[in-house]
Image 1: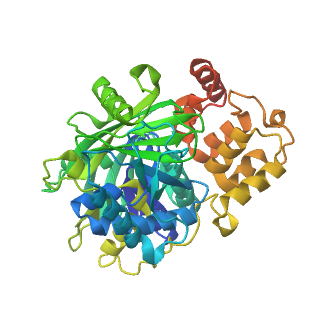
Image 2: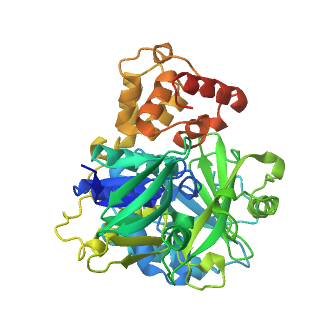
Image 3: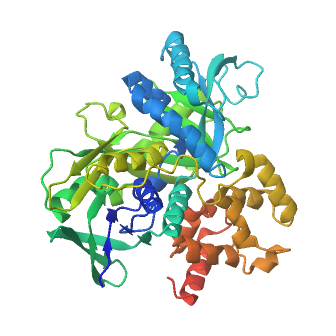
Length: 504
């Protein structure tokens, strides 16, 4: 008998896999269709923050900020290996936002977080003179505002949600194109195509969830032939990575003369991540690239604050993503809401269609919960929400104490270098044991492809995390592309091994 799924989900970004995780935990049958790799587009090209959005207070987006702060605490608790608190330092620059505005802003941020703050520290004002935090900054900067938010590995957050969804019964199909769907006998009949073989298949489902991100409107208009007055505003956000510019685990949040705010964040131990830009975008979201003008813009901002200049020649990696923001008709791209809108189409006797417009990575769990609140009237008998307290795979760390977990892992596998130990603990949490097992040395884990990436880890990524290419492994499942001695040689070695395994 042909399978009829409860939900057919279009898109393998954070919203798609977040909805799949929630749905499968409620006992629903789910098919997820992603045309490329999981997190292959926007969801791996963010500023990698789990945050309330301090700057959104300027646009009076209090509901979004409060919800995001609540989710920051919850995601920190369910994924302590993937989410880490960071202190953000905003140096005060004369001529920018006035002192009273910045002070009120960080205090309001604290206030909105107060009822449910458990893990994250409060804000403060500090003097930069004679402080290590002020050392890399220009001498004209004397005071700063300090507050806390969190950083994450965005691509790994997607993969971890997908693993949880699969283990609860969802079917996850990367490299599978959605080509169209028709209504038939109260169901959707969707056509999908294997992106590598071209093989086509029909999938039947009672409902479609459209989480196609930048393609959400195109899916509606072209693949589903549905008219809608809702749309997304595509905004390009680019980042650059340079060698570490300063010592310490804190990040900087710099004000630019045009009103934009640019981050400088410690990244991968040896680097600094700088971004982001906000540029209206009209092209193919899959073809977006960081431009020279954006690089110059970010460097200029850094050079307003840092003593040591940042130049184009310092850039070791750059990436750009297209943020699909709900089009609220704001003229300024930076002012466009980061909130999400859910559009439900449901008629008696017809299958359900729900489209997600906008959203941000921080609120993925709440967005999924909201999806099922929206669906409840047309899907009677839904099980209650369950995702608030249960950890994501690898996140079952006692007392949410990552430092103690890291020490125990170091005691169990003392042969790992400090970098590799921390990388694996941050990437996999308690599931690093599935890779390392009873190994007594790095040699026990098989071929070393560079930067202590072993055959055992590659096998895990292929078997458990849908990795199919060297790019999947070096730039999404990990960021070891920044650390290997030769990206070309490691890519060639990985490609050969994947071919040997019949994957590539």
